[in-house]
Amino acid sequence: MPVLIGSYADQYSTYDDDFKPLAAPVRTPAPSFLAVGPTGIRYAVGELDAGQVSAFTPTGELINTLPTGGGGPCHLAVDGDRVVVANYGGGSVAVFALRADGGLDRRTDLAQHAGASVVADRQEGPHAHHVTIRGNLVHAVDLGMDAIVHYRLTPEGRLDHVRTTTVQPLGTGPRHLVFHPGGRVFVANELSSTVSTYTSGFEQLDEKPSCLVQPVGDNLPSELALSRDGRRLYVANRGNDTITTFSVEEDGLLPIDEVSTGGTWPRHFAVLDGALCVANQHSGTVALLDLDAETGVPSQARVVLEHPSPSAVIPID
Image 1 (cartoon, rainbow, N blue to C red):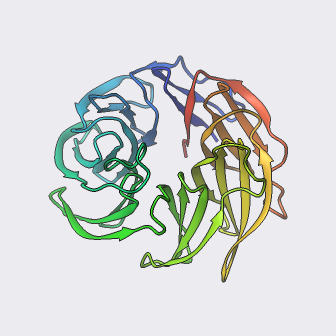
Image 2 (image 1 turned 30 degrees about the vertical axis):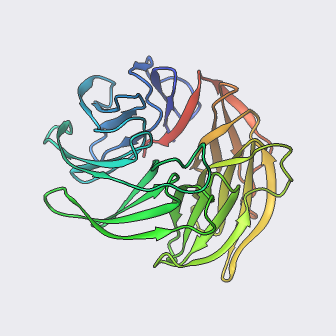
Image 3 (image 1 turned 180 degrees about the vertical axis):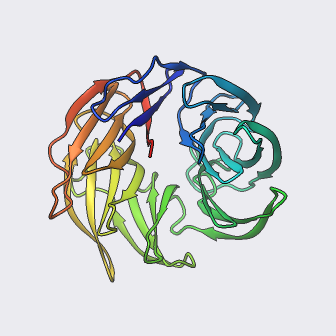
């Protein structure tokens, strides 16, 4: 499956199934995260103090760029004719309408978060880190507030606040979430080095350490993802530089294994056909970990390409 590799090196790149470049890198400021729209248009954040979001054609031509209304945009999601962006530095969530050609039309809303939590150097204010669109609902994970903020996305592109789920214990620092087909929600907690399980209504059921091997220093979970059949949950650990595999059980998560990512600081990964593809940001490498067909456990990592400061792996379906 072809993939896009986002980075902090002012470029993103496109690779085929064998990790050979399909085109020259696309030059754009700090495209740390990307998403692919239904027509193949690429949307990339520009993780700058003056945050921006850009739209590109499938061949890499810039369509247009708009400001996100907040600093440090680090994540985005696209659904139909809307793009939603999480501004980490600004602690806000922005919504953009799309034009017929897939370009960005205008910003239709900017929801500013307010609040802080107990870790002084990381939670001095709101830090929106991840956004998910499900139907007409937007769920925004805010590391700075120790919260998941739930919005209703109106037909006009407005974010109507529904409620806020406060994460416990304070200081957990939620980062990313994933919805299981069975209804549960799993959240990677960056500051507490844990992964939490919630009901579909965001009532907390369980919390587990994100790694099996005791970290020597800080360990900061980043991305998490489910296997295609929903039987396994994978969590990346920056510090241990590993992927932990959990079995998804009726009564919670059961840790199975923890394997090296073959590099340092796995910021993001994606589940491809039969493998995990990991962006090791600090070692400047992208690694592939084949998945055992029976157990779903990843094998020893092998580096498949070198890329400056890789930060995201986005499959192109």
